[in-house]
Image (cartoon, rainbow, N blue to C red; front, side, top):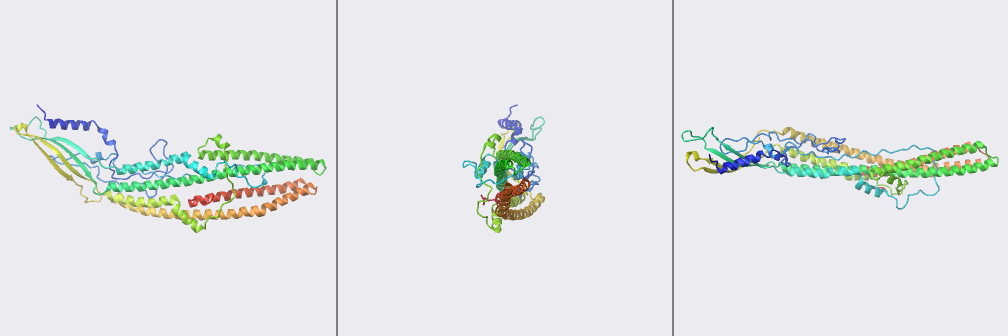
Length: 534
């Protein structure tokens, strides 16, 4: 029996279709629903495709809704053929888009307080700012942004979000369909008429008349902007961590300097006491007691030196510097407040609300929530399908008549009698209200953070000034007077050491207050979201 060429063509087409069952996985095409758009906070399994970052403001974790019925077969009738294939074969991974990723801010670095042994004394001369070629805080911030491994990892969430925009922009694939109808059990003949056998080739192309693709692109683009803003907030918090680690280094260096001055001062006191002992103006016990104090100060110096190395290593981790290299690095800076006063609190609050990326991310998240509501509305309607059947072959050979060819054109339109997405539309509408409340909440929290940071700056500045101008000079004068009385034999060493202890406590209080004030300057920068103080 001779098989007509059109039948061979159809058979080849069917065979090729059967040989490529995995072709549907080759491209992410039209997506008629958004699902799983919020990532869990706390990270993902290493090596997985889950984001290890956080949730996007304004993105409903339940998604913007599926397209109910979108996976139903496109049923046809015998005759002019249409595809019986499920519509989902045109949309690999039907039911969701790749989840949008959010960049969660890193946790703030805790303020470290190393154990402090021994005694402290303010050295002569102004505070050293370190070598001129030492790393400044600006250079540390620049290196952080370029080399910090955590930020480099989080920055890759932005191109992934751009890939989500690409996925959202992909169009639905048309359906190619070929079949043979009215094949007899046996064969048709004039005595046993039927058929004729019919061979059909057609293409069904989806028509997005509700503009779902446009809504998907808008939604994914706004999610991208939220991701970018969240990354900026992650950088803001990481810069604050650099502030903390950098001030730790400056504080440890100053503590070492104070401890060295105390060791040198007690060494001089030992020599002075030994001279008094030689003149029978002090006892051997006095010399021994001061030597003991000197040893305690040396232990404190050792602790201060190791604390300085430890703080350098901590900063080195953030800047992606090897520990040995970090220990050898020098840093330039001071814990003294040498900057101008910040603007008034009201102005600081307005700057924060306008510039802080976490606030901006929630504003952008509100726009994303509104885009999600529009997407849920567009997902109410399924695509229509336009059918073009360029070739139909009817085999009339059994009738000894000429076979016929024809073409056909048709359309399949789901009738939107029922809103199959109304629950998701309502969910998206409520998500807008929820995001508005969250935006108001974060704005209130930002106002409170700025006020607290400004008050901390003002209070610590007053404390530092009072200790430096009042308490320390009086305490030092008392110590010097006690030493003069000790040298003249009018007071014993116990009296002098007590005045030395009070002075040492005041020096510690001054150093702690100065460091606290230096931190408050940088904390104010973080609270405002802008570099106002050096």
